Length: 233
Image 1 (cartoon, rainbow, N blue to C red):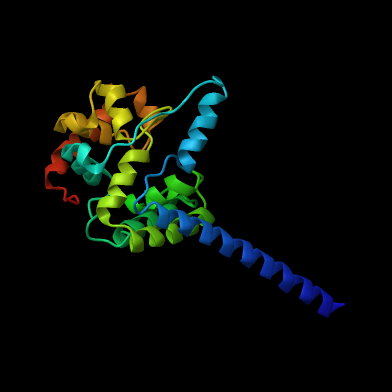
Image 2 (image 1 turned 120 degrees about the vertical axis):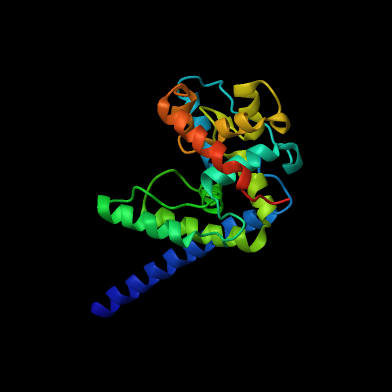
């Protein structure tokens, strides 16, 4: 009887491992394809579309892909300054940032901070959900390694700027620039770039609270840091 139970357990574990491996292969195949093909959607975009269609079934996302060279250098610098100052130096993970996040999580007794780099945020946006869990963070780490070992930093920032959320149903720098400033992303000024970068941590909230003191502080902080930010050429 015990032998049968052990056999059943090992069989179940083998099936689970096979499913896990198949999932990783599926993800990695997409990562490789997107080295030189642009993603038309992402997990976050799909979730966002479902959310806005709950109240308006005919609603569509605002999203338009633009190449790296048609995104303002000011926005690139503002995003790196705001989200990942060590972007060009690390290989996907900011160890110091992770240590600070771990300390904060231990103090709170739950997962409240992730210390995520731009590469980690991109991995999450493309394939995962916004749920905070150690399982999700583990999968995020695997995908981050896949991306960092196959993509250039320029490609990582290009895809990131084209798929992240900038408000309810608004995705990518071009859609955000036209929504908030009525102009293409290529012509954003330093002040406008800082204003957009300040929205990234909580875009749907900042969309309706851009007059708040919290938002103004973030914009000011980013404006002060962005000129020293290093970005891919």
